[in-house]
Image 1 (spheres, rainbow, N blue to C red):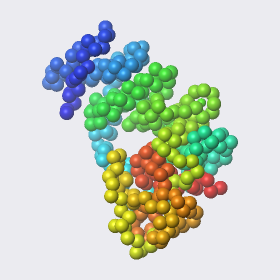
Image 2: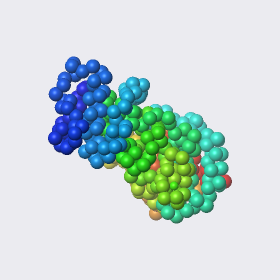
Image 3: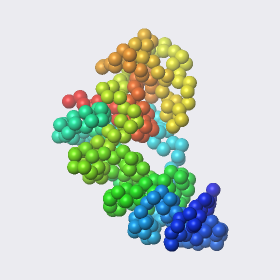
Image 4: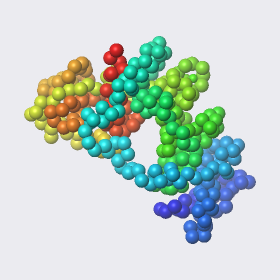
Length: 352
Ligand SMILES: [Ca+2]
């Protein structure tokens, strides 16, 4: 499907019941449209989608007519390899950890942790998620709130939908961003990364709608300027992704040279980001891992805890046994290097 393939299939003007219903854009062929007309036509499609999803008319009228296209963002989407994004990282984990889990992130994470110690304890009792993990995700996503992105989300998401490589995704996120405005979030607050992630937790708008949470108890979930709301929202996400209280994300281990890797290989194919899950072994209990000679480097996990093995840098290097909570971190950002970085940073923050 090319640029102009967004015919308003099934979205007729009559179904809108609106005086401002768009013309049948699909009837116009691409060679009759100047680029600016094409953009205006595409905005009519977004308007139809937004109305169908119940976005308020005032929100649509205030934000769509003047919306402009951002070609720089389209260029970023055009050149980003979708299959690889952040998870197809080729290379070794140890240099990645050195450049991502920096001394500065550890130091600032410890500072933030102790400054908010009591409030973080409250978040842990409410959500059951280890506060050091919340801190680590906040640190890795936005350098503790200092780098949250300045791109206008509506413009970015509409431009990405217009370009069309991942149209369905970006269109539904565009509508979700309008719904955030419906809920009272000011338009100027909706800034983020070029791909649509916003606020301290770097949530996509649909996730912000569903899972943002109030961490400081003022009754409002402000993921853009309130640290505790940002951390509570990360906790809310991880709990929703299946986080189990009082279980570590994983532990570093040493593997014996005679480990039978074929015997522990994972034979299932994950639905979501299979190339990431493929690197994880099948599940065994800690007791079974020890019997195979896979031993924790320092602290351990309970004997009956299930864990899967990853050897990111191959045999004879530090490997990790990972619990189900590691998979909740993968749900947040599906990259093994990212999720291990979160765990390693969290451990460093907690080790005070
Ligand atoms: Ca709040």
